[in-house]
Image (cartoon, rainbow, N blue to C red):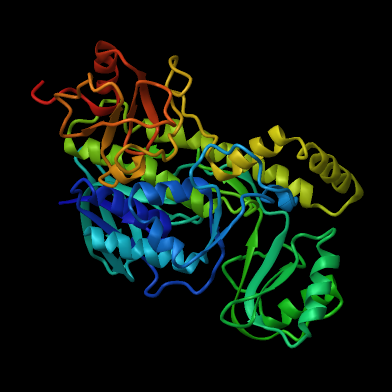
Length: 476
């Protein structure tokens, strides 16, 4: 029997597969498409995703193929400088096309030992108390102890489970593509500057490999968004918005996206779970979608592995929904707000000017930036130290740095006292006796995802907190 079947081989599915493999879990990824998509929707990774990659020793591979930019200008495209005092050692955004992110995570999952089967379409599933049976389009069946749907906004898994996906349908569509333009570059730049004063859903930017990436409002909402626009439709909308089609020709790919906003009513049904766009869809404002999915996988992987290993506390797997669904709900809300600020009517433009003025206050700008980049997240772990539930940024140690110690995906006790112990949990928690000028508490217990599960100096108190996240001590 397979341990975990993952439906969907995009960034969420591949990140989850790799996280499971860190713990020896047999993961099989079923990807319906036979080849990687050429469509590039996401163009970057935010701070928290960069931290996640660094915690697993992957960051350098991404940095080598991307471009670092200051953190700023994310919220509704309002141009503001990077706020001071961001709580991270990775104070930048990485510009990197999604096809490269997809490829690197795909290679990471394969190198970790995950099995990825392309051209495999899941069409049915049934579950019982022992596992899940997945039915494939070719008539074959696979049996696993758990199944995770990472199969996008039109998720087959979610539909098969009958999980409701409430929210709002698209009100506007936007066309997106990579194609050639014959217009003079200076003309294109001038049009960008002028039109984007009021219409931020328009833009034409040059690509490193030649050609342009172009985005333009669609004429209406498509009945079937999976059907790409034609070149004629694309040119027509360019003329309607910019007064010229810019000589558009020779598209590499064309696509469309909407602004629907939906959130799955639950993330778990027995032995089946949802992650990434299968659990939430929202407008692309702030570039949060791909990042949100990667972070879902990072939260779920170690918990699912613990359940399979038999040491997970009774409510550990349910904490995936408890923690991640509110995060997604907040993303849906902030993208709703950003879409309002993008509208071109006078009321929306007045509101946009007001928000822009408020963002000149550093506290406001910092708050919104932490929201978009996901470094302001604090999970509810109950009463306790003010750090409880927050993730800990990478900090320097006398020997190396913190994130270098987290590549194995285990818990970690960073002990500046040298007097504490994780005896009984050493198979799940690393004990690092070291110190940092950036840590002003005696010790912290980190979950495998880097969130602070305990802070203090008292050994009996630590022993009360270890079982909550890491189960009973060995031999008990």
